[in-house]
Image (cartoon, rainbow, N blue to C red; front, side):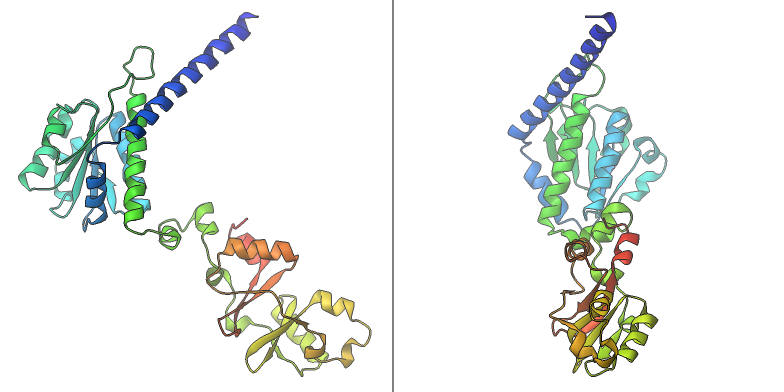
Length: 323
């Protein structure tokens, strides 16, 4: 084995050792979930105010992520820097809030003023630490104690295992609260309107063209007039209606397949009956799958009474980033 290959093997082994150490720590946490976890989740699920998260150093970085996860899953939350709290930001914390304070040692000096503030104004406080006998955990109303396990760094000093455990516990708490609140996909879209996730959660009603754009034609309309309607609306289809209800669709393909004698026909005679449709509440991703499956360019959108309320073109879906 060359020296370069040996060096690579050693580096890879280090990577595996770190991941194994942290994975085993997560399994240990899962087997011994903190005793106050359920009570803390119930507290946050019933909360009328916000979850104020604070920590210093690596705990602060993890705290910001936990706060962001809570906020994005329906639990109002924001991060307050512990040092800034001592210089006026304590005013951001109200009696309706809950404080979630993070310190692996439980003795972080910068958290002192927030901790005292919660005690002075009877603000519920959740502590996350691996030291159950620390100042933080002795003062906490709800104690989320982490298992005391070795850090993954060779000196046992760099926050690695402890921050991974804190982050995972924060995720577990956020998801538990999310489920207690009954937070669903519709709610999720409200907080994630941008990016790929927002696009995937869009519904047909968010992307469809409304009634004024519908290429509607009666069943007895002559094909010459049907062609004018199809051309003016630019969707490549005409929707045949009878008494306001959709009874068929004429596509560009239907026109090509019936060129002989086309102008002697009526819309109802040419239309494909029982067309593929969707309702406004269907996810746009589902509509795209249907468009691809049937190899069509547009879908009529109908209400529960089969009355056309919109039209969705495949280009509308793709432009929105649903793919």
